[in-house]
Length: 228
Image (cartoon, rainbow, N blue to C red; front, side, top):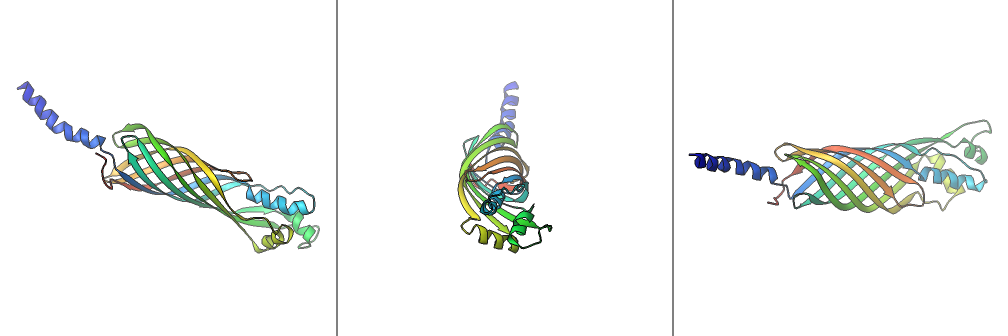
């Protein structure tokens, strides 16, 4: 009788345990990202204009940017994954460039005028991801990726005219190699739907300072095919 109960218990528990160990072969994720940015190209543009007059123009280039990211993830085994992450973030920064506009004669010597910069940053990353802790349908992971970052610096017409006149060779669009490291947590909430939150540090290898601390959250779909 005891053996019968053991067999019956194993019969009912085995499918549950197998289900708990199942892992999706593919995952697709889309989310919103909020980023603290140290965006050096703004200072680089101010410096390029100031160099013409041999003056230093300080330009605050730390601010927040918002956007989204999209991830396609191929799971390998029970803990490893290979992922491609695409991100985009945009923001606005107002910088006082009165000194430059005064020297150009755009405003009077006692006047003031600010420049409005609208940077956009695009990232494309590839790399491994590893689950450091799994419990039921909750996964905590770390990741390290490499790829490229593209920076596009837009600005108001007045500032654009000043930059084109004083520093015509200054590049407002650049593409650089970049790395990203981070960690996150995800959990299946209903059937094949999961939610994910993560934090990442992104660093492009550019001539000017660029550093981004990104927090993202969103929803994804899993179980497009199975590993086991």
